[in-house]
Amino acid sequence: MATLTASFSKLTPIQKRRLANFRANRRGFWSLWVFLLLFGLALIAEVIANDSPLLVSYQGQLYAPVVQDVPEETFGGFLPTTADYRDPFIADEINAHGWMLWPPIRFSYNTINYNLDVPSPAPPSAENWLGTDDQGRDVAARVIYGFRISVLFGLILTLASCVVGVTVGALQGFYGGKVDLFGQRFIEIWSGLPVLYLLIILSGIVQPNFWWLLGIMLLFSWMGLVDVVRAEFLRARNFEYVKAARALGLDNRKIMFRHILPNAMVATLTFLPFILTGAITGLTSLDFLGFGLPSGSPSLGELIAQGKANLHAPWLGISAFVSLSVMLTLLVFVGEAVRDAFDPRKN
Image (cartoon, rainbow, N blue to C red; front, side, top):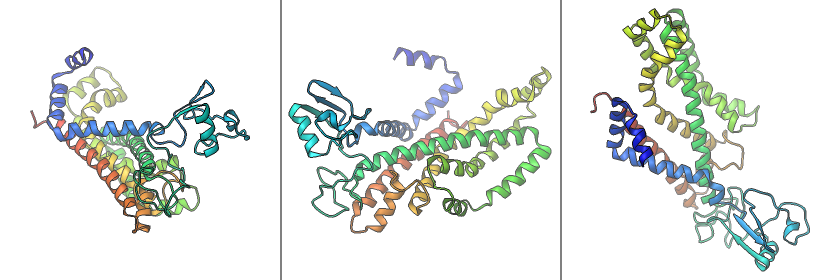
C-alpha cells in the first residue's frame, strides 16, 4: 500500500485527473478488474483444465506431470511413452502406491472423453461441466483455452497495429507535402482490398496458423490509427514548443517521438480497447467460417460453428455466446472508461 501511495504521489496533476476520471466510471473500472481476473485464470489454463494431474506421489517420489513428461514405465507400465493418467491401469497403480492431485477440470482442450453415457455431443454433467462437443471434447476446457488464444491474439495484433499505425501517421503528419499525399493515396488503395477474400485465397495455399493469421491481419489493421495520429501531428507541428525545439537544434526524430508523440497518444489510447475487440471478433469470424486457426485448435469461433451444426445441443452455442458476450462487453466498458479518462471536458 505504501508503494502504491508513493507511486500515486509521483503522478502529475493531469495524470491524477485522468486516473480519477477512469475510476469515476465505476462500470469501466470494475470491468477492467473482472477482465484481468478472467485473463489471469486463462493464462494458467493448464492448472485449471488438464488431462494430467498437477502432482503425483508414487512410492515416495513426487512428479509434476503438468510441466514434465513422465514415462509409463515409472508407474509400473510397459511403454516408454508418456503415461496416460486416465488409463484405469495407471490410475489404479498410482492410487495403490500414492496419490494424484487433479485440476478442477480433468480434460484438456483436445482430450476426448471415451466414457460418455450418451453419444456426442453430450449434455452438461458433473464430469463435463458444459457438456462435450460433437467429437467428445470438454466444452469448458475449450472455452478456457479459446478465451486465452483470443485475448492473446487480440493484444498482440493491437500492439503491433499501434506501432505501425502510429509510425505511419506520425511520418505523414509531421512531414506533410508529398509524403502525406502519396501516403494517403496508398492507404485509400490498400484499404479497398477485400481482406476476407484474400484470406480465403491464401488459406488454400498456406496452412493457416496463429502467426500466419496475425501477419495477414496486421497488413490491414494498422490503418485504423493513421488518421488520428496524422491529424494530431498536422495540428501540433506548428506549435510554439515544436518551433522552439527545432531552434534548439533537435533533429526531426527527437521532435516527433519525444515531444509531439506523447500528445498524439492521448487520442490514440482511447481507440485501443475498441481495436482489441475488433481483432477478437475478426479471429472469431475467421474460425467460424473455417479459415482461421488449424483444425482442433481451441477456438470460440469453431465452437459457434459447432453450435450452428448441432442445434439439438444448445449448450454449445450458449457457451460460446456467453464467453464472447462477457469478453467483448467488458472490453467495451473499459474502452468507455479510458475515453472518459482522456476527455479534457471531464474534471
